[in-house]
Length: 193
Image (cartoon, rainbow, N blue to C red; front, side, top):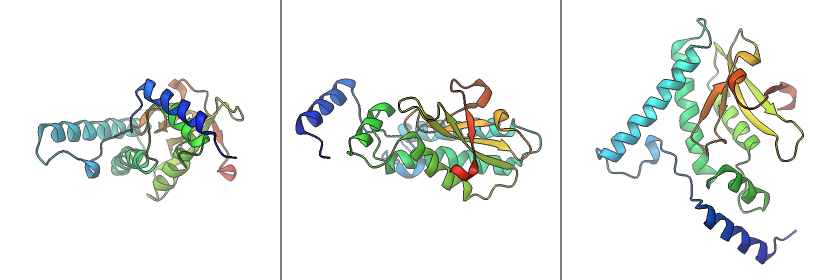
């Protein structure tokens, strides 16, 4: 079914009024600033600080986790969330991008796309001390269903894990403990991924 021109025009006006712009989430490989500028150094420091904070949150899951794996997992999750934003040609806010996907203007970028793609990239790490889970909230609700990656240590229950949600902040990875997040997360059985 073709989208009427009038609908597209209204959508473009709506996007313009919201001030939506293409998401530009920093990671070192996409830096447009000149090397050594204060902007690029600031961006790099913020990026590295974000990775360190996630690494500490992963290590805090359990004394049994491998700290080197935590560092690799943190770096990969933060970087690949930004890479996915670029691949999806993401616009902000996330709901505006969702509308673009539904209208056929963009191919990917719904929360379950983020989860699928981030999950594949994290599974490629072949983690030994962490377990990856698919989290879903409000499953089956057309407007409220939300998906994310949940990471636990190998010996923990899903509800003790850490939500990794790149959709929520348009590629700027959000994380929180499952039990402390605003969504009522449930584990999606691996057979349904």
